[in-house]
Length: 234
Image (cartoon, rainbow, N blue to C red; front, side, top):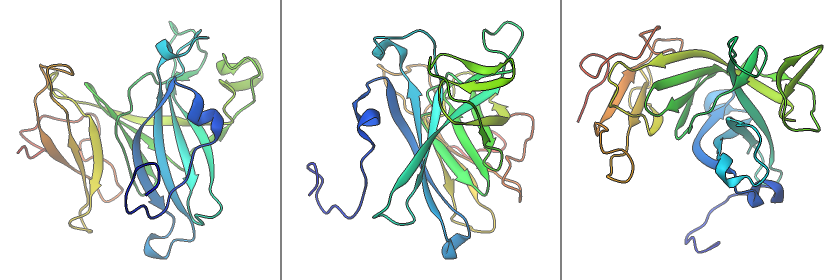
């Protein structure tokens, strides 16, 4: 095996600067192909959340980044980090857009939409056709549009939030999500949450399925609704 893993088939290592920092924590993982079974490109997407208490030089929360890993050729792995951002408000310290400070424990991709679990609130959606290049920042502290420049903590790309879905039940959490393709004609989001005395003793332990429209959107466009309608609890 490799590093204690038996029956290892194939894999890759992160670069040293990603392996060695303790404040970026990898969480969710999903895959994407461009072209289905005949894809010319294959990607693995990994979410990381910023844990500021692990950063000895902490000055500002940096949110969530997504690693886009080109695994088309496992002998030639390339990847790039992309910062997730959402609109800023007048009370925010970041102008125009800001980082998204969530756990990002689960992610799932269908078509060109990336869904990111937002633990106790619901889900966030991102359009993968709208990734924007921004300016470098040697300070690694600026984010947003400042003057004529656009910054994202020295990341070269940002992925803006397209939609946000809220769950009406305050005690239900989304710890992980994936795509259920049991029926290829009607794929669904498959979600669940952890429950433990040391994690969230008030969480409702559920697994649920959420209907998607033909365009890959959750059918309730304004919010996730209660488990008595779109989801099927077990």
